[in-house]
Image (cartoon, rainbow, N blue to C red; front, side):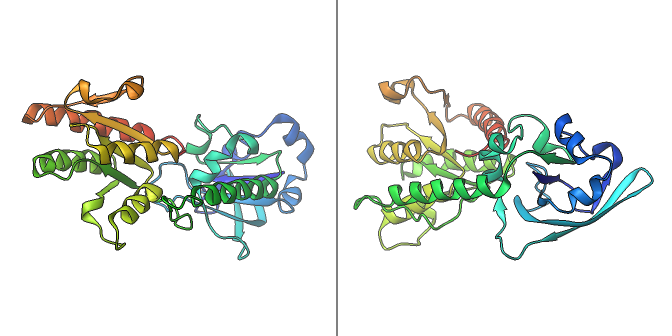
Length: 284
């Protein structure tokens, strides 16, 4: 078992939030002397998913004391120096194995739960699989992803033709991304590697979401979209003409837009809404 502390950065939990989302059987096993049992369990402390006031990372440690004080419980959480912070997206990815509901309100509500799961076993197995996947992604001589670089949960990678006529489109995308509380970049705005492809791979690897404009059937954008799907990354397709969407991708929803001010305003709204939805989901 382990303690799951969500949004309890003030070291106070209301009495009614203690043992929320805890199975009745687990609660029974803890018994009336639950304080001493809790202090013997490992603990995972993290902010609510989507709370931009705090870094979206989880910390492993222990609760060294807990005591009831009226209608609240006060406690002391001590982070372990043996473990690095864990992106909350990782916790979301293994939530079902930790007996956490990944799609409901459990990760978005301040509370304290005790879960019947082996926290370390689940996290270590996930890390091992991720390491294996990283070796797989870096095995191609033509495609070398920077597998040691962490995902940026706020980054949106924009893949589109490098043509001045698309500048106004990029400005609209950038506005939508900012509306969603995220940041965007396209490869012509960064220079980290000697070869452009190195910057493309870096941007795709680090991004949480990829926006790909397929207008004009640009072969580079098609290739980059394929890489984004293969990683996989959440990908939003855009186009000015439906005929520019390849047959194999027409089963995937896309946003169609125009260049007029009203059309771009609609694109900003639709794209912003989609980004907000993806922001609330786990990255794949």
